[in-house]
Amino acid sequence: MNKVIVNSGLKAFDVEKIRSDFPILHIKVHGKPLCYFDNAATTQKPKVVIDKLVEFYSSMNANIHRGVHYLSVVSTKAYEDSRVKIKKFINASSEKEIIFTKGTTDSINLVAGSFARGKLRDGDEIIITGMEHHSNIVPWQLIANEKNIKLRVVPITDNGEIVFEEFVKMINGKTKLISVVYVSNSLGTVNPVEEIIEAAHNHNIPVFLDGAQAIQHLNVDVRKLDCDFFAFSGHKIYGPTGIGVLYGKEKLLNELPPYQGGGDMISKVTFEETTFNTLPYKFEAGTPNIADAIALGTAIDYISGIGIDAISKHESELLEYATEKISGLEEVKIIGNAKRKSSVLSFVIENIHPHDVGTFLDFEGVAIRTGHHCTQPVMDRFHIPATSRASFALYNTKEEIDVLVSGLKKIIEVFK
Image: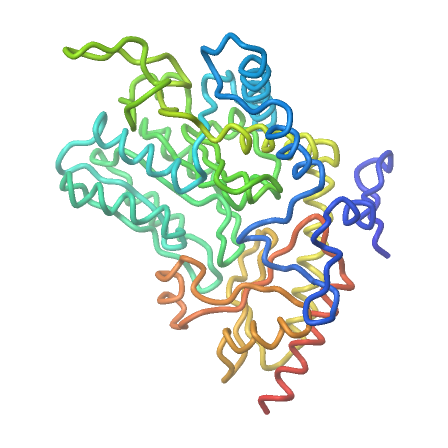
């Protein structure tokens, strides 16, 4: 039941084999097997990623770039090899377009800060949507307050989809940037980013894609998308926390001023002036997160070995199965019913607070996320304080979903 044949049948998606690669999935919670459905918050790590971190600190720990001794040379090569892997994974044109950051939030703040200093003037406008994560709202609000910039918000429907016609109407001569979430972390909606980018580029407006919830589920090709910026976090794609990536078109990145000052982002420093390093180092000030960047490369290798299309197919089947099962519970209402969704299922249960749902399920060994999911405007849009969210990954199974549904039935019965 747990084996899904994908594509031409040349490769089998063996979820039990995959689960054996993740040590944490074999622990017990309150005496019961862990069913981990909090993947939108962070994914678990395969042993190869954990081993890579141990290997770095055990046999190659040294600061990178400029060092001529053995350890520095080895660690520098591993760090830059990881950059190349990421470049290939998202099909960027050059390694110069791959900037290591702390994560998606850091990447958005980098562009917000640099773009504001280099491109924005009083009266300009930035467009976002009504389903953005706080990380794609607050940085733009800070810039708006500093520079007298107007932030415009595309409304969303009752199904959790953007009103595309309203988005098109918002674009005008003052629009300088459009920043959109690719996949909503609280609704699961997969936005029509191709159409958004095309509409923006018809007016020569660059587009930033928040790819935090897309990179691990969808085949991301930044050149095919033709997005101008794309950001994701390592811990969402089975890599470590504290590491992420900002992709930017080389021409645009060259036009932007540095975000932070310090070591490695300089070419020459005097007390009179500083000349900056070339890309991507212009945006990587100070000692970077070397070990986690290298381990992110290992996570990319792991995902590539399985195949993102195979993963996507498996997760789509899980989402369809879970949606059918949970929809069958009369007291449960799903929040977010877009025609195109990824591996997120948010719901509310009549007269039961999501925090109570999460606490009860924890004693069944089921880990879900409850709250506003850093999307308070989405909660306001649907007139609810919070949701319960189950989010799926490559190692989840239909049997685990059965445990989740059984737990929900128990909760409903108890609270009756």
